[in-house]
Length: 96
Image (tube, rainbow, N blue to C red; front, side):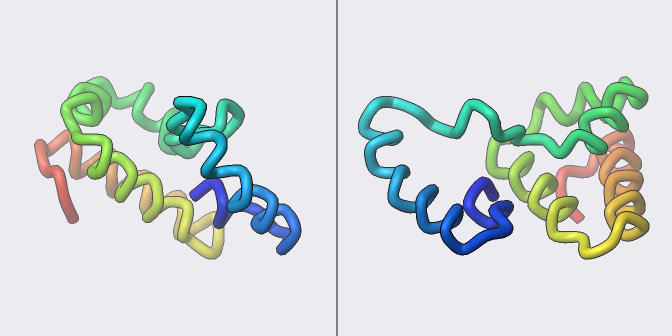
């Protein structure tokens, strides 16, 4: 997601080239890159049951939800996806 979020080709290229040295030094992710999109983070903060179930997800499941939100082309779709994730998690569902 960190690489795909870069708007410029040069930035993506620079990020790709930096990955081997970052991994070799023990970094698992860029320090400035949020794993959870901010709008999803805020929605989870307002939905205690969904937040509780979010913490029970594996890192792969969390990444799938975050990628789904980030892949939305417009803000309306993004908002609907965030709402759906909160609803699903509050209902105890782990996948769409």
